[in-house]
Image (cartoon, one colour):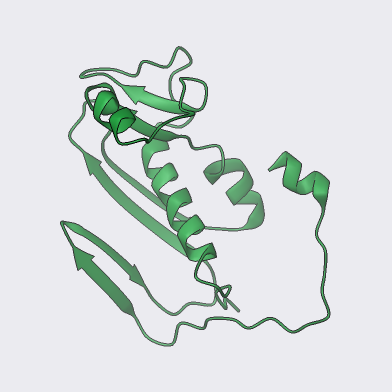
Length: 144
């Protein structure tokens, strides 16, 4: 976030095209669901469950603003479980992962020396993933 702020914002004269949500849309499969409903604000609810004593069920509800994103969403690190590491490496994933930029859980605890940045950091990271996916749609969402 600091680097983005330092780079600044460049404004263009060309009008942007937006994606306006006019009716609720929901996709469900594999025990997962995502829904988007019309709103004049970016309201986000994220609900996750991982069968782990340090994670469990986590729920995040917030209005996402640039300031709240920077302070409460962007710092949330990706996470994984120690028993999955070998398989993930074999798949070519987690190449740059370390305990400095990702959370690793063993069967009972957090392996990161500093612990979690937020008690619901896993949920916040899933929200971060969603915001990133929405940014890749090709058009910004219309929220006014």
